[in-house]
Amino acid sequence: MRLPALMLKDAACIATVRSMESGQSDIDGITPSGACGNGRNEQWVRDTWGNADFTPACRSHDRCYETCGAAKADCDRVFGSEMRGACNRAYTSRWHAAHRKLCREIANTYESAVTRFAGDSFRNAQRESGC
Image (cartoon, rainbow, N blue to C red; front, side, top):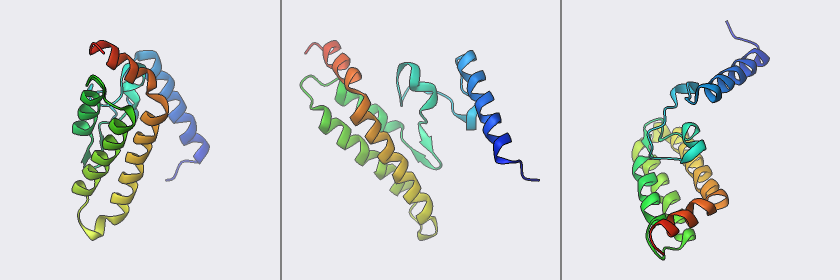
């Protein structure tokens, strides 16, 4: 039996409110690992998407931000490239072309998010590294 779209939307809203109240996410099995995202957004940022593991790319991105004198644009560009590489490695079969394409779009979204919204994180990391 298919639930009406409105009921599904209401259920997602309730789950989101409960997650925000408890400080933990239970939506789609999202659990924070500390690799992707930081601070308040960490619980909403997945470290994996399907078979693709973004953890190495996220950790590399953090190290880049913490490297004194690093260029934010370079860190963000490499981050996106490493995430798309994770998608390509996770979905090699031509039968998984749709999964690979969607995964790469998720990677592009992550890259766009850090490019647009992670300026404070970059500046804080640079400051903490002694720059």
